Length: 225
Image 1 (tube, rainbow, N blue to C red):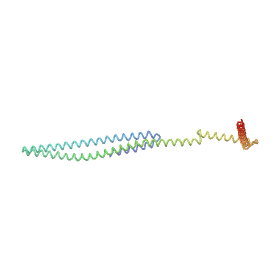
Image 2: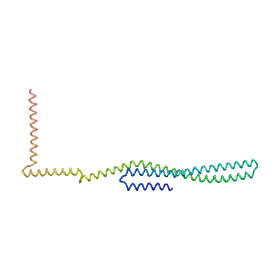
Image 3: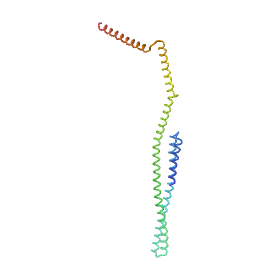
Image 4: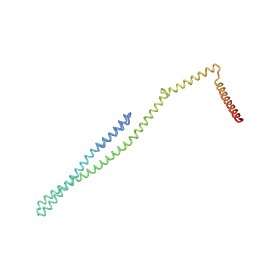
């Protein structure tokens, strides 16, 4: 069927266009659905023409059948009157009408079968479009997720070179370097950072012990009072 081939071509060309212009996938998916629906409308028009032909053939077959019955009644009436010549002429007209009836009936049955197949094809196309609409949301979400992933990957790549993250890391490294240089100069001046830290720890411990001793003394004085 020519219209079915055209519908397939529209779908393939739309998919190709989607591939070529994937930078705006949501818009392309929306346009793809519109193209399918427009082509389906054209297919429906073609099917409507075929249905109209089937209806005309059926009515023509019915008219010819009625014509044949009418001539048969006329032939019977002529015979009752004893008019054999008229009866014979009426039967000839009846036979011609019957022949036309058979021809139109045969063509009508063929057209009817073709129309049923066309209508089934239209229903199939409608179902495919419904499925495409259902998949559109999923495809849009998948494409959005892929785009988001690409943006995240790009951000991560920039974080190793020129982003605020990289600048923070460079500043942290600079501070570490300055601290190391300060410690280096202290050692060159005879200072020992490890010894200073040990002395600080002893000082903290001794202070804690003094606080504990004074607290115990206060408890004892309170008890004697």
